[in-house]
Length: 167
Image (cartoon, rainbow, N blue to C red; front, side):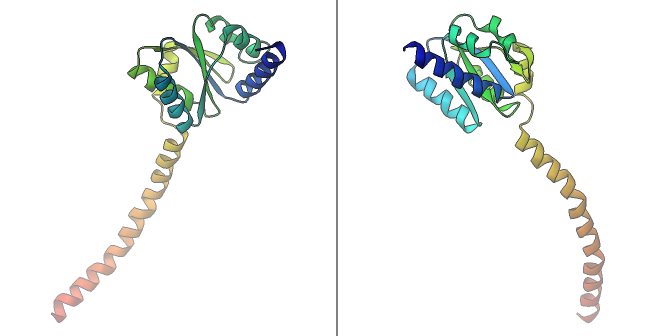
C-alpha cells in the first residue's frame, strides 16, 4: 500500500470513527477467515462495523479527535468495532468474545469518555435502543388496554344478564 492509499484509508477511518458514538478496541489473533466473516456478519446485523487496522494507522486516525484516549490501547494485534448506536458495537463484540477466546475486549471510547474492559462488558448488558423503545411503548400502551377492557366489562355483564333472563 503506497502513501496516498494509506492517507486515504486514515482519512476514511477518521471520518467513520468520529461519526460513531462508540468505538471498541479488541485484541484479536488467530481468527480464521470463517470466524472473521461471522463476526463481521454479526456486527452488520447490529448496525456496527469491525475493522482490522495497523496500529500506527489507527493511532494517526484517532490523533487530535475525541478518541485520542484510545491510543494507549492500540498495542499488539488489535481491531476496532464502532457504531453510531451507543451499545450495538459493544454488545455484538462482547457476545462474540464470550464464544471465542481469540478475541478479547480491551476498552472503548463512548462519546469521548474512555471505558475500561469491565465498563464495556457492563455496557454490553444494557438493552439496545430498539428494546428500550418497545418497552416504553408497552408501558404507555398498557393503561389504555386495561381501560378499554374495564370500560367494556359492564356492557358485557349487562348482555349476560339479559341473555340469562331471556334464555
